[in-house]
Image 1 (cartoon, rainbow, N blue to C red):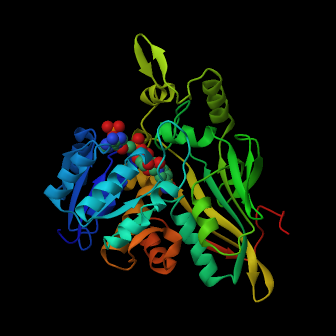
Image 2 (cartoon, rainbow, N blue to C red):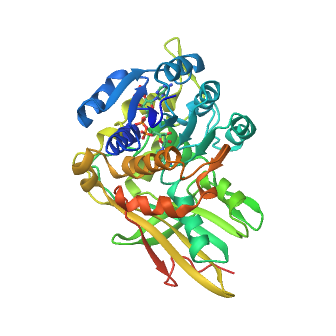
Image 3 (tube, helix red, strand yellow):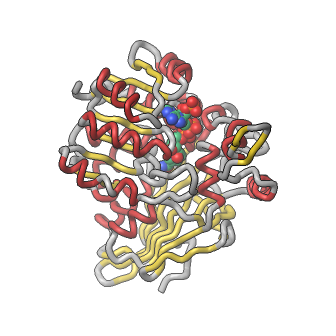
Length: 403
Ligand code: NDP
């Protein structure tokens, strides 16, 4: 194993950001290899980064043997998985076989059911522990920084957190009629499933996009936000004691919702194969093929994202409100590394998570979620690498339905 070396898998919007950001910190990421299904995408990113910082390779990450061969030939200390959630388990398996640490930004999802749950990956805990390895799950922005923000709030501002609302706004305009900001297939599977939140010890389900609220975001103003199920709710409910309610909200504009409804109504978001000209085709996979790639959206993208946690709890016996957030400007990150803000806000935390692991600032044996570690070192790296954060204590929150 070569110390300070990383294998990044996935050369899409997020993979490009992780590669750029790792390359900019040679003291930690001494050697970098970027591998993906389509090698030309890796070569393009490596050329943009310049010099000979990044080696590239082709790999089908659905195939454990191919992954093992690649890992054995390069001997990285860790793998950063920014391919698709479908590949999480094969990559974890290959890491176990080769004694390599693991990090990802999205939890495992089987192809044939749109269910993103942690239990498949948590089940690897004992095997990682027994091998003396660490796997860090969900280290993007949300999941990722949303959990770190929550852990930071608990450490510094609360004795107990009772109400958590994660609020995710993209107020950007990419000028396309319809495009998703990360992988279209994964994004549409997430949005079209039933909404779900945690309240009083149980999960409550609602129809897809049926609960809406105007939430005002810093420097942006009010935007229609919809209650969604999002994977970090599952780990936060497990890891943050005393939570009475945890919800997740995301903005969508009317144009996006209208396109999505039409696509759903005509069956284009389905994940069951349909027979077409003698072949089985998954409608959503076909739709992905005709939509713009997330990595192509950066040019001309204007406006900001704003993602944060609105928290209500108690400190010293008194109720307390707390809001912590980051705003990220699409045009600014395009100027910096040619990315758009959704890829950027995911890729930067993935790089910082890798840094936490390689420097042993965060260490553990087994499978972990980000909120299980000390948030302070991560929080201090965020602004340094392009994601400044802000906080407001005891101000007004968007919600008043606290008990
Ligand atoms: P893209 O679609 O832009 O990129 C996905 C990349 O994975 C492509 O390079 C693709 O290759 C590669 N890939 C797909 N299948 C395989 C395979 N079998 N073997 C090797 N490589 C493969 O997606 P994004 O970059 O937008 O998203 C990447 C990940 O980040 C997703 O899992 C997404 O859910 C996650 N994410 C997490 C967020 C967070 O905040 N936590 C937010 C946004 C995204 P090819 O080009 O050949 O198709």
